[in-house]
Image (cartoon, rainbow over all chains, first blue to last red; front, side, top):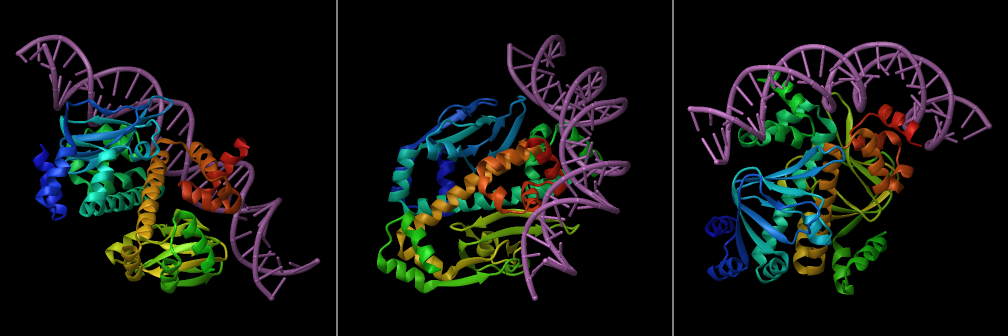
Length: 190
Length: 190
DNA sequence: TCACTCCATTGACATTTGTCAAAAAAGCGT
DNA sequence: ACGCTTTTTTGACAAATGTCAATGGAGTGA
């Protein structure tokens, strides 16, 4: 499974064989079965995680026990809890496999080291961060200005593949509405 | 006004006198009166902007003509439209002074150059980006899981000074609710 | 294939939030 | 200080969304 990560890296920058080997040496491949946790609330997250196959979701559980999905990560996406990673504090998120999945894990101490030694990796990570910020910004805009129906339409447009792949109640949770509301919206949309 | 920017920079990293001079050479100070625009929808944003005094807001206008505030930037914060900056596409945001304000502007071509020549500046920017991402993430969580009242409470807790400084209808807009709703919430909160 | 869990849909109803209109209060420029 | 604009509050009502409960269907593991 490391080869998929390698392929991804090479698609982003011209890493040398030596650099790739360094990265591989720091990597651990972890397989997760559907519903298995990569991180549970209360644990400290100390990795950088790249998804090579499958799909994971990051969610919180509120006071009433309801789940709220903060994001999904499918193959070729990164996941994790950067808040916990950088603060060293226990995470308030759960990261769970939505499908059987495979992730490449690199402990952050080693990852920092790699970023220093491999400028291209550092740039790649900063670029991801930049894109993540823009995506988050767009999602905030949708959240504060769109109706439930508009949110769903925008979601379909931006991530058409997700709608096919994910159970609808998860999409609803991601969009900040109930599964019943989403179901009703879909009725008169389609 | 450049001295305030310099002070900020020095509080973040040990820039040399020479580096600060390079940065100053690329900087333009711009004063804005209340309600004056720093950026209007349709323009391409090509700067990096640091607020040395005052307060600005970034907002969109929806199909019905309603404004939605994406964020505020007060003294010692950065602002701008990174989406437009990196894509070169016209911005869909408006950035406007909420109070009389002063900003330091650096054109992005020069800023990129500075980032390359001054590693500490590059790290600073990446760190800002990282923090911005975390803040955005938290705001998304609030948006998808909190009621209007909970959103306001969280806002008060996170940015107590903003509540005193900003008109309430702007806070409401930032939180994704109407000014009437916020007014009613405040009635039984206080 | 069977039993079982998970998922999507629907209806009735409750609650939250928005809309519109008006008035009072506060802030601002001259 | 005055007049004007902006902001906040309030009420009555409308619309959107959530809650609860029930049902049927789809998916899944043994």
